Image 1 (tube, rainbow, N blue to C red):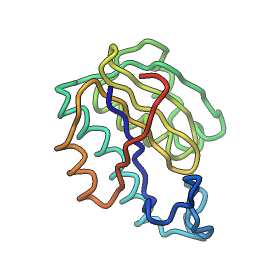
Image 2: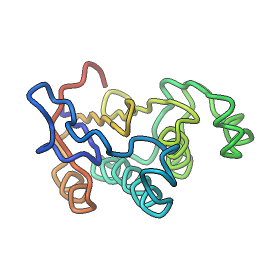
Image 3: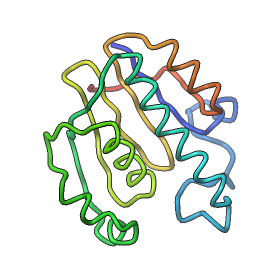
Image 4: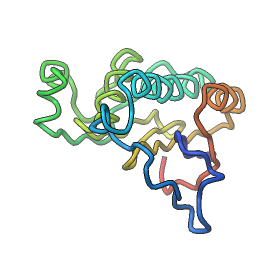
Length: 161
């Protein structure tokens, strides 16, 4: 099993415990306007979405299943996603289009979800723009593509897939 932590945070700026040392880094959708421009935020959000799609493509996976889901009702309403979220349930097979929307809503802290495909692939999210991907196969092409986009891909031990 292979697993990675995908972030916007340069690992050179981590302390010995793995914590990120730069304190004024933006970490949330709510930081738009104070710590990050909307343009930079949206570019970064797209990089995360494309990272998941790159790993899925290398694994030849066209859909994922909704494994875990938490709704934050205020955020869902603010993002005008209520009707979309009514079409989501645990165990549902979600298309790439739906995956893009779920990732966006997760990064914007409107929902939290984890997605998986059998025991071959998984993606879930932590706080502060941490994303974790697990795969049954190594994905060197996807890793390179994500790194080239400006994100960082670190090998990271996941407890489950």
